[in-house]
Amino acid sequence: MVAPSSLSHPVLEQVGQYIRQARRVAIVTHERPDADALGSSLGLAHALRRMGKEAAVFLFDPIPFGLDFLPGLDTIVADLPGPETDLVIAVDAGEPAQIGPRLYDAICRLGVPLVVVDHHESNTGYGSISAVFPQTASTSEVVLMLVQTLGIPIDPTIATCLLAGVVFDTRAFATPDTGPETLQAAALLMERGGSLYEVMTAYRGQHPLKALRLWGEALTRMEVRDGVAWTSISQEMYRATGTTMEDTEGLANFILDAADVQISLVFRERPEGGMIRVSARSKPGFNLVPLARSFPTGGGHKMAVGFEVDPPLEEAVPKTIARLEDLRRSGRLDDR
Ligand SMILES: [Mn+2]
Image (cartoon, rainbow, N blue to C red; front, side):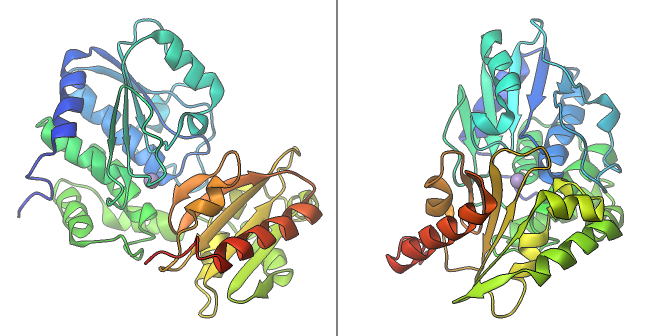
Protein backbone atom coordinates (compact mmCIF):
# COMPACT_ATOMS: atom_id res chain seq x y z
CA MET A 1 0.00 0.00 0.00
CA VAL A 2 1.01 3.62 -0.36
CA ALA A 3 2.52 5.00 2.83
CA PRO A 4 0.34 7.83 4.13
CA SER A 5 3.22 10.25 4.13
CA SER A 6 5.32 9.14 1.19
CA LEU A 7 5.58 12.87 0.48
CA SER A 8 7.70 14.07 3.33
CA HIS A 9 7.24 17.54 4.68
CA PRO A 10 10.13 20.07 4.82
CA VAL A 11 9.61 20.80 8.52
CA LEU A 12 9.85 17.08 9.31
CA GLU A 13 13.09 16.93 7.34
CA GLN A 14 14.38 19.73 9.57
CA VAL A 15 13.24 17.91 12.70
CA GLY A 16 15.01 14.85 11.32
CA GLN A 17 18.24 16.87 11.10
CA TYR A 18 17.98 17.81 14.79
CA ILE A 19 17.40 14.17 15.68
CA ARG A 20 20.25 12.80 13.54
CA GLN A 21 22.67 15.20 15.25
CA ALA A 22 21.50 14.30 18.76
CA ARG A 23 22.71 11.46 20.95
CA ARG A 24 20.61 11.74 24.10
CA VAL A 25 17.03 12.79 23.56
CA ALA A 26 14.51 13.73 26.25
CA ILE A 27 10.86 13.45 25.27
CA VAL A 28 8.15 15.33 27.15
CA THR A 29 4.40 15.71 26.72
CA HIS A 30 1.45 17.39 28.41
CA GLU A 31 0.47 16.85 32.03
CA ARG A 32 -2.39 14.45 32.73
CA PRO A 33 -1.36 12.57 29.57
CA ASP A 34 -3.93 10.85 27.37
CA ALA A 35 -3.37 7.97 24.95
CA ASP A 36 -2.10 10.26 22.19
CA ALA A 37 0.35 11.98 24.52
CA LEU A 38 1.66 8.65 25.81
CA GLY A 39 1.43 6.79 22.50
CA SER A 40 3.25 9.48 20.55
CA SER A 41 5.96 9.98 23.18
CA LEU A 42 6.60 6.27 23.80
CA GLY A 43 6.35 5.45 20.07
CA LEU A 44 8.92 8.15 19.33
CA ALA A 45 11.20 6.94 22.15
CA HIS A 46 11.10 3.35 20.82
CA ALA A 47 11.84 4.62 17.29
CA LEU A 48 14.77 6.76 18.41
CA ARG A 49 16.25 3.80 20.30
CA ARG A 50 16.01 1.78 17.08
CA MET A 51 18.14 4.54 15.51
CA GLY A 52 20.74 3.95 18.22
CA LYS A 53 19.88 7.08 20.22
CA GLU A 54 19.45 7.20 23.96
CA ALA A 55 15.87 8.32 24.41
CA ALA A 56 13.60 8.58 27.43
CA VAL A 57 10.16 9.98 28.19
CA PHE A 58 10.12 12.31 31.21
CA LEU A 59 6.78 12.53 33.00
CA PHE A 60 5.69 12.95 36.61
CA ASP A 61 2.01 12.13 36.23
CA PRO A 62 0.38 8.74 36.79
CA ILE A 63 -0.70 6.61 33.81
CA PRO A 64 -4.47 6.86 33.26
CA PHE A 65 -6.68 3.86 33.95
CA GLY A 66 -6.77 1.43 31.04
CA LEU A 67 -3.58 2.57 29.29
CA ASP A 68 -1.26 0.12 31.02
CA PHE A 69 -1.06 -2.00 27.84
CA LEU A 70 1.18 0.60 26.17
CA PRO A 71 4.63 -0.93 25.66
CA GLY A 72 7.43 0.96 27.38
CA LEU A 73 5.55 2.56 30.28
CA ASP A 74 8.18 1.06 32.59
CA THR A 75 10.86 3.15 30.87
CA ILE A 76 9.20 6.47 31.75
CA VAL A 77 11.38 8.60 34.00
CA ALA A 78 9.66 10.54 36.78
CA ASP A 79 12.52 13.01 37.09
CA LEU A 80 14.04 15.98 35.30
CA PRO A 81 16.26 15.38 32.26
CA GLY A 82 19.96 15.66 33.12
CA PRO A 83 22.72 17.83 31.62
CA GLU A 84 23.83 15.04 29.24
CA THR A 85 20.63 15.67 27.24
CA ASP A 86 21.36 17.27 23.87
CA LEU A 87 17.85 17.49 22.40
CA VAL A 88 14.36 17.82 23.84
CA ILE A 89 11.25 16.86 21.87
CA ALA A 90 7.82 17.94 23.15
CA VAL A 91 4.92 15.97 21.70
CA ASP A 92 1.17 16.71 21.82
CA ALA A 93 1.68 19.78 24.05
CA GLY A 94 0.17 22.97 22.60
CA GLU A 95 2.01 25.32 24.92
CA PRO A 96 4.74 25.30 27.58
CA ALA A 97 2.21 25.53 30.44
CA GLN A 98 0.79 22.14 29.46
CA ILE A 99 4.18 20.50 29.99
CA GLY A 100 4.13 21.85 33.53
CA PRO A 101 6.42 24.56 34.92
CA ARG A 102 8.80 22.20 36.75
CA LEU A 103 9.66 20.17 33.65
CA TYR A 104 9.52 23.09 31.23
CA ASP A 105 11.86 25.26 33.34
CA ALA A 106 14.30 22.37 33.58
CA ILE A 107 14.20 21.94 29.79
CA CYS A 108 14.87 25.62 29.23
CA ARG A 109 17.81 25.54 31.65
CA LEU A 110 19.43 22.75 29.60
CA GLY A 111 19.99 25.28 26.80
CA VAL A 112 19.54 22.64 24.07
CA PRO A 113 17.16 22.78 21.08
CA LEU A 114 13.50 22.12 21.80
CA VAL A 115 11.61 20.47 18.94
CA VAL A 116 7.81 20.61 19.11
CA VAL A 117 5.73 17.93 17.37
CA ASP A 118 2.00 18.46 17.67
CA HIS A 119 -1.41 18.67 16.00
CA HIS A 120 -3.18 21.25 18.19
CA GLU A 121 -4.76 24.13 16.34
CA SER A 122 -4.03 26.31 19.38
CA ASN A 123 -0.29 25.50 19.40
CA THR A 124 1.56 28.70 20.26
CA GLY A 125 4.58 27.97 18.05
CA TYR A 126 7.00 27.71 20.99
CA GLY A 127 10.31 25.87 20.77
CA SER A 128 13.34 26.05 18.46
CA ILE A 129 11.36 24.39 15.68
CA SER A 130 7.68 23.66 15.59
CA ALA A 131 6.24 20.81 13.50
CA VAL A 132 2.53 21.36 14.03
CA PHE A 133 -0.02 19.73 11.73
CA PRO A 134 -3.48 20.96 12.76
CA GLN A 135 -5.20 18.96 9.99
CA THR A 136 -3.88 15.73 11.45
CA ALA A 137 -6.20 13.85 13.80
CA SER A 138 -3.50 12.84 16.30
CA THR A 139 0.07 13.65 17.23
CA SER A 140 0.79 9.94 16.81
CA GLU A 141 0.19 10.34 13.05
CA VAL A 142 2.67 13.22 12.97
CA VAL A 143 5.19 11.02 14.78
CA LEU A 144 4.50 8.28 12.22
CA MET A 145 5.34 10.73 9.42
CA LEU A 146 8.50 11.71 11.29
CA VAL A 147 9.53 8.08 11.81
CA GLN A 148 9.01 7.46 8.09
CA THR A 149 10.99 10.58 7.22
CA LEU A 150 13.85 9.24 9.33
CA GLY A 151 13.58 5.87 7.59
CA ILE A 152 13.23 3.98 10.88
CA PRO A 153 11.67 0.52 10.48
CA ILE A 154 8.37 0.35 12.37
CA ASP A 155 8.17 -2.64 14.72
CA PRO A 156 5.07 -3.91 16.59
CA THR A 157 6.05 -1.94 19.70
CA ILE A 158 6.22 1.40 17.88
CA ALA A 159 3.10 0.49 15.92
CA THR A 160 0.97 -0.30 18.99
CA CYS A 161 1.96 2.95 20.72
CA LEU A 162 1.11 5.08 17.69
CA LEU A 163 -2.08 3.16 16.90
CA ALA A 164 -3.29 3.86 20.44
CA GLY A 165 -2.86 7.59 19.88
CA VAL A 166 -4.72 7.45 16.56
CA VAL A 167 -7.65 5.43 17.95
CA PHE A 168 -8.15 7.40 21.17
CA ASP A 169 -7.75 10.88 19.66
CA THR A 170 -10.23 10.07 16.87
CA ARG A 171 -12.61 8.41 19.36
CA ALA A 172 -12.16 5.19 17.40
CA PHE A 173 -12.25 6.86 13.95
CA ALA A 174 -15.40 8.85 14.73
CA THR A 175 -14.24 12.48 14.81
CA PRO A 176 -14.76 14.73 11.75
CA ASP A 177 -11.01 15.17 11.35
CA THR A 178 -10.68 11.41 10.69
CA GLY A 179 -9.69 11.28 7.02
CA PRO A 180 -8.57 8.62 4.59
CA GLU A 181 -4.99 9.35 5.64
CA THR A 182 -5.95 8.51 9.24
CA LEU A 183 -7.21 5.10 8.16
CA GLN A 184 -4.15 4.60 5.95
CA ALA A 185 -1.92 5.39 8.93
CA ALA A 186 -3.87 2.90 11.06
CA ALA A 187 -3.69 0.26 8.34
CA LEU A 188 0.07 0.75 8.00
CA LEU A 189 0.51 0.47 11.77
CA MET A 190 -1.52 -2.77 11.75
CA GLU A 191 0.62 -4.13 8.91
CA ARG A 192 3.68 -3.44 11.08
CA GLY A 193 2.24 -5.46 13.95
CA GLY A 194 0.14 -2.95 15.89
CA SER A 195 -2.84 -4.67 17.51
CA LEU A 196 -6.06 -2.82 16.70
CA TYR A 197 -8.01 -5.30 18.80
CA GLU A 198 -5.89 -4.65 21.87
CA VAL A 199 -6.14 -0.89 21.38
CA MET A 200 -9.92 -0.99 20.77
CA THR A 201 -10.44 -3.20 23.81
CA ALA A 202 -8.56 -0.64 25.88
CA TYR A 203 -10.57 2.17 24.26
CA ARG A 204 -13.90 0.59 25.21
CA GLY A 205 -12.62 -0.37 28.65
CA GLN A 206 -11.54 3.07 29.80
CA HIS A 207 -14.02 3.42 32.64
CA PRO A 208 -14.36 1.40 35.84
CA LEU A 209 -17.82 1.04 37.36
CA LYS A 210 -17.18 3.72 39.98
CA ALA A 211 -16.64 6.20 37.14
CA LEU A 212 -20.05 5.27 35.70
CA ARG A 213 -21.57 5.93 39.15
CA LEU A 214 -19.94 9.36 39.19
CA TRP A 215 -21.24 10.03 35.65
CA GLY A 216 -24.71 8.98 36.79
CA GLU A 217 -24.60 11.62 39.54
CA ALA A 218 -23.32 14.22 37.10
CA LEU A 219 -25.97 13.38 34.48
CA THR A 220 -28.70 13.73 37.10
CA ARG A 221 -27.68 17.31 37.84
CA MET A 222 -27.10 18.26 34.17
CA GLU A 223 -28.68 21.45 32.83
CA VAL A 224 -29.52 22.31 29.22
CA ARG A 225 -30.28 25.56 27.39
CA ASP A 226 -30.41 26.08 23.61
CA GLY A 227 -28.44 22.96 22.80
CA VAL A 228 -25.77 23.71 25.43
CA ALA A 229 -25.62 21.04 28.13
CA TRP A 230 -23.46 21.35 31.22
CA THR A 231 -22.86 19.67 34.51
CA SER A 232 -20.42 19.88 37.38
CA ILE A 233 -18.57 17.55 39.66
CA SER A 234 -17.91 18.55 43.25
CA GLN A 235 -15.37 17.26 45.74
CA GLU A 236 -18.28 15.66 47.60
CA MET A 237 -19.18 13.61 44.49
CA TYR A 238 -15.65 12.19 44.26
CA ARG A 239 -15.86 11.25 47.93
CA ALA A 240 -19.29 9.63 47.61
CA THR A 241 -18.23 7.47 44.64
CA GLY A 242 -14.59 6.81 45.56
CA THR A 243 -13.42 8.45 42.33
CA THR A 244 -10.81 10.98 41.24
CA MET A 245 -10.74 13.64 38.55
CA GLU A 246 -9.38 11.03 36.15
CA ASP A 247 -12.77 9.28 36.26
CA THR A 248 -14.38 12.31 34.60
CA GLU A 249 -12.44 11.78 31.35
CA GLY A 250 -14.89 11.12 28.54
CA LEU A 251 -17.96 12.54 30.25
CA ALA A 252 -18.08 15.71 28.15
CA ASN A 253 -17.96 13.62 24.96
CA PHE A 254 -20.62 11.28 26.31
CA ILE A 255 -23.00 14.21 26.91
CA LEU A 256 -22.18 15.68 23.49
CA ASP A 257 -23.33 12.44 21.86
CA ALA A 258 -26.93 13.21 22.87
CA ALA A 259 -28.87 14.03 19.69
CA ASP A 260 -30.10 17.40 20.92
CA VAL A 261 -26.80 18.68 22.33
CA GLN A 262 -24.53 20.98 20.28
CA ILE A 263 -22.06 21.98 23.00
CA SER A 264 -21.26 20.20 26.26
CA LEU A 265 -19.30 21.38 29.28
CA VAL A 266 -18.14 19.58 32.39
CA PHE A 267 -16.97 21.67 35.36
CA ARG A 268 -14.79 19.83 37.85
CA GLU A 269 -13.56 20.75 41.25
CA ARG A 270 -10.15 19.29 41.99
CA PRO A 271 -10.16 16.87 44.90
CA GLU A 272 -7.43 19.05 46.46
CA GLY A 273 -9.26 22.34 45.73
CA GLY A 274 -8.01 25.29 43.66
CA MET A 275 -9.06 26.27 40.14
CA ILE A 276 -12.13 24.67 38.55
CA ARG A 277 -11.21 22.63 35.45
CA VAL A 278 -13.59 22.83 32.51
CA SER A 279 -13.79 20.54 29.48
CA ALA A 280 -15.94 21.75 26.60
CA ARG A 281 -16.88 19.83 23.47
CA SER A 282 -18.91 20.72 20.39
CA LYS A 283 -20.36 19.20 17.29
CA PRO A 284 -19.05 20.49 13.92
CA GLY A 285 -19.93 24.10 13.07
CA PHE A 286 -18.49 25.57 16.27
CA ASN A 287 -15.02 26.70 17.23
CA LEU A 288 -14.59 26.68 21.00
CA VAL A 289 -11.00 27.96 20.94
CA PRO A 290 -12.13 31.62 21.45
CA LEU A 291 -14.00 30.51 24.59
CA ALA A 292 -10.97 28.64 25.90
CA ARG A 293 -8.63 31.50 25.03
CA SER A 294 -10.79 33.95 26.98
CA PHE A 295 -9.44 32.24 30.11
CA PRO A 296 -5.77 32.43 31.14
CA THR A 297 -4.90 28.75 30.68
CA GLY A 298 -7.26 27.71 27.88
CA GLY A 299 -6.47 25.82 24.70
CA GLY A 300 -7.31 22.86 22.52
CA HIS A 301 -8.98 22.06 19.23
CA LYS A 302 -12.03 23.71 17.66
CA MET A 303 -14.36 21.06 19.00
CA ALA A 304 -12.50 20.05 22.16
CA VAL A 305 -11.04 22.57 24.58
CA GLY A 306 -10.04 22.78 28.23
CA PHE A 307 -9.58 25.74 30.52
CA GLU A 308 -9.63 26.76 34.18
CA VAL A 309 -12.04 29.04 36.01
CA ASP A 310 -11.81 30.63 39.45
CA PRO A 311 -13.72 28.87 42.23
CA PRO A 312 -16.26 28.56 43.72
CA LEU A 313 -18.17 26.17 41.50
CA GLU A 314 -21.51 27.93 42.09
CA GLU A 315 -20.07 31.10 40.53
CA ALA A 316 -17.80 29.51 37.94
CA VAL A 317 -20.66 27.72 36.19
CA PRO A 318 -23.09 30.62 35.53
CA LYS A 319 -20.20 32.97 34.66
CA THR A 320 -18.78 30.58 32.08
CA ILE A 321 -22.16 29.73 30.56
CA ALA A 322 -22.96 33.48 30.27
CA ARG A 323 -19.62 34.08 28.53
CA LEU A 324 -20.23 31.17 26.16
CA GLU A 325 -23.71 32.48 25.31
CA ASP A 326 -22.31 35.99 24.65
CA LEU A 327 -19.60 34.63 22.36
CA ARG A 328 -22.10 32.41 20.57
CA ARG A 329 -24.58 35.26 20.04
CA SER A 330 -21.85 37.49 18.60
CA GLY A 331 -20.91 34.74 16.13
CA ARG A 332 -17.42 34.32 17.55
CA LEU A 333 -17.89 30.58 18.02
CA ASP A 334 -19.11 30.03 14.45
CA ASP A 335 -16.90 27.82 12.33
CA ARG A 336 -17.92 27.98 8.69
MN1 LIG B 1 -3.51 14.60 20.68
